[in-house]
Image (cartoon, rainbow, N blue to C red; front, side, top):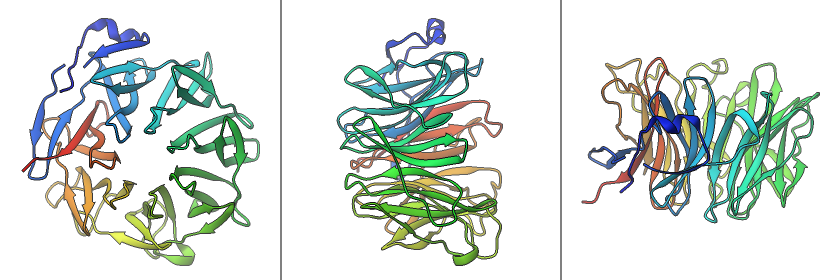
Length: 350
């Protein structure tokens, strides 16, 4: 069991180990929900990644708009070192415990992609103004993007060295969002004002993997599993980007819509992560009667399941990551977004 301490001393964000309080847990028909809780009063916790050992990464935010990266390991929350700035995020963790972060510089809002490995913080550098890490695989390869004077460029880091990724002909920018253990990368290219195309990088070649709306479609690829299945989101035919976006899975590089909980959906749906068993997590518009609510969702065997967690003041929930054991992490928040709590969903024992 994970335990939590809420002493005011922790607001100072000093680096170190903190035991977490006894977690409150609720059971739904499919899962047990554990509230990872806030590190201290007047802070919020956001979970973004989980590895197959059940180690969780994310960030803590306080009322002064500072954020610090953390990892929950062996029942303790570790606040990670930073480059010195106010805005810092741990985005992903592999099975070796290596963590991909983004950390801002002291006195600046500019961020650098960083790697936390074997107790050391490694600055991965920039090509231009700033850089961000978005995912790490079990080979230690990291993907993300860098901001230059010519726009946003997708990149990969291997052995600490940054490599530019190709872009579609005519694209004026892009991001790399996910990488699997085979080294296949997914992300997005900007192909026109406000228009995005989901792309796959494989063995140095870039492929536009399309959208439901085809030529006038908007799509974003977020993660890829070792079987080459890709998840993300996209708009329906004839609908402008950002409006009524639906969750997508690409099978054999063809987009398929994942049906959400409410039809029609008033809010965007998104498939955020997928494991090698084909289990997909993300968020969707909540069932009818709660038009302002957003639910954390597990798509399994073609069906969407509400993971729960929207209780009390929390009306919005989202699942961010899933491991091979089926453990899911994500967040729940108030409608105003003024408070966020990290949560974990685990399959209920029958």
